[in-house]
Length: 336
Image (tube, rainbow, N blue to C red; front, side):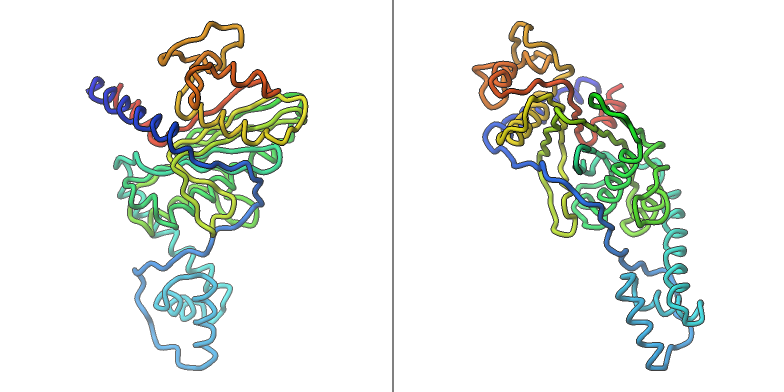
């Protein structure tokens, strides 16, 4: 089984390298403002009670429907239950959706979730990567799932920014699944990320996992290059970039040159395609296709030189990197 998994991953990597070399995908270096997820969409498990007949009641119903996005049937039931109080009805709707989500999550727990998306979000001197898994690629293309990834990225960014480090050099951190689940959902949003996960499971009907997160914070004199492969973007997701592979590369630089963003993108592209295990040194001997030290590897976009030879004239020093591949943790566990 391990041999089959190894062959499968080798073929997948060869395909990735071809696409990176011949069809490079644009990446992001843009900053992001904290944004809120769009309102949840309807579910259909409630039963309607007595009719709301008056014009004012119908107006309340329309207002609640527009504000929450839940179905007319559910909004009607909420208003009847809460005596026409709009605020209480909204809270009641969210509470019922939460209950349904947790119930469905318990039933689906344990089902394999190897699909999903990597999310990249950058703001100021901070960049975060998150991985959220689902069962099928079909669900990963659903806007509701992508909004969940957005909320996880915002929660991780908020957590990272709350760590008041006295930065003299860069800092890097990681969160596992259980740690990520307990994070607050972010500014202006109630509940923990695990609550938003339950809501998404309730709506989309698949097992989902908040797999992991990483962040990098840098002081002046450093730069974070980034790249996402297989980019999926939606106007409603603002500055979140989604894909199947992503990398952050920490560079030390003397000055903010005009081409720094492009250099950072190319370095991230190399990390995604060549999957190095360490940075290495400019003094290391050049290696071949199996080399795992980043600076000694053949440069992805020009294999006639090493990455170190590409970097030297650019005025930057590569000091660290983070690479995420969607589903790689799950596949490694299966191979074991």
